[in-house]
Image (cartoon, rainbow, N blue to C red; front, side):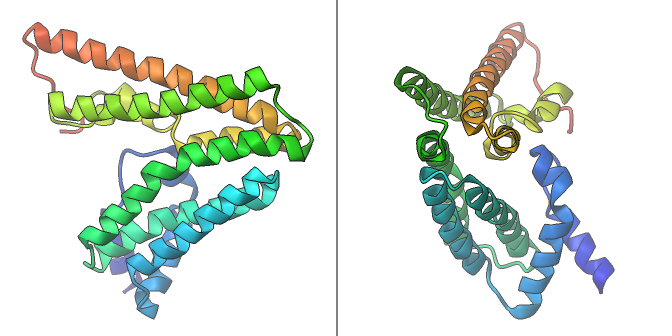
Amino acid sequence: MPAIERASYVGAYKGVTDLLTKYLWPEWALAITRVCARAGITPNQVTALGSVLCIVATVAFWYGWFWTGLATGLFFMVLDTVDGKLARCTITSSKLGNAWDHGVDLVHPPFWWWAWAAGCAPYGRPLEDGVFWAVIGTMLFGYVAQRLIEGAFIVRFGMHIHVWERFDSWFRLITARRNPNMVILFAGLLVTRPDWGIVGVAAWTAISLVVHLVRLVQAMVRKARGEVLVSWLA
């Protein structure tokens, strides 16, 4: 039975994702998924708990309680993996659950970054006003622009940008999405400089945006030359 459960779980796991989801917590998520399945806990109930934890983490960041926020956020991020895997493994996917899960994933990251930047003041490492707004603007613009680029790539080429070539799948491990950004914030907090962490997230967001934009332009040029673009995983 454990072998069958593991095979079902692995089969529901994304091959192209960030480094934390791929390498750090698959076993944690498997254990929680197994417990939930045996206890009759539904994917939507997991998503609901995760949504509450997501809000708690946001409030903690805002008040400069960064370690509390990170711990809460970590649990939420693991549950964010669990709900989808539980739905697939138990064949209990629903339109509501899918929309709820992806909606939370899409909306919350900018609020986390804003709350972290604001929380630097009560923590004792406030950002100067100019730096604060430059960080917020860079992160918001970069986040939205990267999502738009990903959507444009899917519409134009019929596949996700992160599965085009091997480089793109590798870059997905570290690109400026929530989980890799949390690693940057954690590193900054380790040296008691959460302000450095959020500035690092803004810088990495800008760099990631440039990489995605370059890849989109390269794909468009190659298609214009008559090349048929296919995923290296196909």
